[in-house]
Amino acid sequence: MSQPTLNLLSFKGNMRILHLTWFAFFLSFFIWFNMAPLIGVMREALNLTDQQVKTLFILNVALTIPARIVVGMLVDHFGPRRMYALLLVAGAFLCFGFAFADEYEQLALMRFLLGFVGAGFVIGIRMVSEWFPARQVGVAEGVYGGWGNFGSAAAAMILPSLALWFGGEDGWRWAIAATGVLALIYSMVYFFSVSDTPKGSTYFKPRKSGAMEVTSKGDFFLYLVMNIPMYAALALLTWKLGPGNLGMLETTTTWFIYASLAGIYLFQVVRIYQINGHVFHQEVPEIERYSFKQVAVLDLAYMVTFGSELAVVSMLPLFFLDTFGLSPASAGLLASGYAFMNLVARPGGGLISDRFGRKKTLLILIGGLVAGYFLLGNIDSGWPVWLAVIATMTCSFFVQAGEGAVFAMVPLVKRRLTGQVAGMAGAYGSVGAVTFLTVLSFVTPQVFFLTIAGAALLTLVAVFVFLDEPRGHMHEVLPDGTVQMIEVS
Image (cartoon, rainbow, N blue to C red; front, side, top):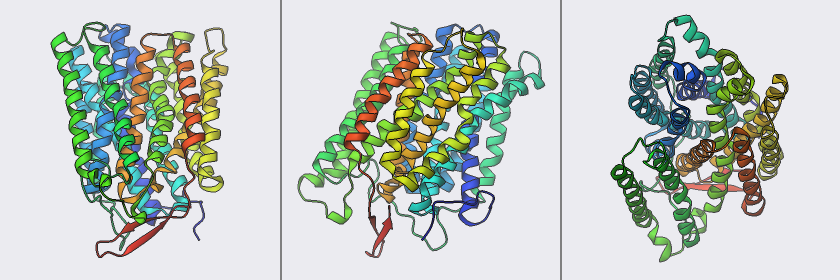
């Protein structure tokens, strides 16, 4: 029987796929967060206001909400090999557009579109779940997510120095463009180096496309409710950009976007009914059922773990710069400590979850997250810098280990829907980021940290009350009608 240990020094078999895939994710995050460590220089070069900077932070995560849902559906249908290569190519050219934008409007548009790159995470979740058994999937997904997430820390550590190396007032532009070049090259490497499944394995696809399958009437309505926050987050962003706040959108445009979001949601409701309307007329066979409640709770857990990470990684370099009066390079380097923990914390969360129970692990880690953000909420200029960095890294351990624990469960819900389940959880991460960054635009960083702590406390209750420990097997039906049992515990 497989044990939850991996030979990370190996580059053969499924370990080869894992290493190639986490590096694809690493590059997507390297691009996605290439703005944060350079924002201080950009603010001076382009004369950006504080509100314009905070708006760029929000725009950076906004498109990821729908992108992760759409990419989750596409990866289930077309496979992760093609989807990851395509995403890296698209991200490279969007990166070039951002690097050489001259006006704030162009800068904002490119930053918004670059949120698409954040959907890459979903692709690798499906790839890794195809190559690793249940007893290893938690730690494998943790390595994938943790080492890939380190791309944001690498950007914070490398890009300020790279900008200085290029030199001149456009050094930051060339540093950002260089990240796009890397992604373009690696897209070809990845496409020609991996396969979607091990030889002889079946790649299970959803029976219908356009919405997630559910298996009961209660799950149908819960699915409708859980879609609302994703549209609400986009409406919140629209309001923030509208005439009553930043004034980047005219009144007519703002109301058009509101109406469009409402229309798209109603269209999705119809599509969900078209795919799942049969649950109102006949019972789904027991062998086909799964509990959507699991998906809903994991969505909330990822909102306060990864959502808070996205928000904090975006603002932390500027927080250290303004709070302690550091240079941009020093602030970026110290702030990278938050994301640096991804290297060990996220795989550690997956490993602990594999060995000691998935619900118990998630409860402990979210509890630590609550305490960690409460601690960060008390940091001010009177703290020694070294103590602030230790507090930041302690908090980040629980945040990123919690992410690992969430995605130790995601692949165990329903195999053929793994991309969509991962996509929805990932979208909720972006919902959390948009929400928390919007809060930040109105309050001090200390209140921002305390707000995250409060949201995490509510999520802790939801995990305790509603989440079930995965047990036994899930079942999938092969094209010839044969039932395949996939172990989940």
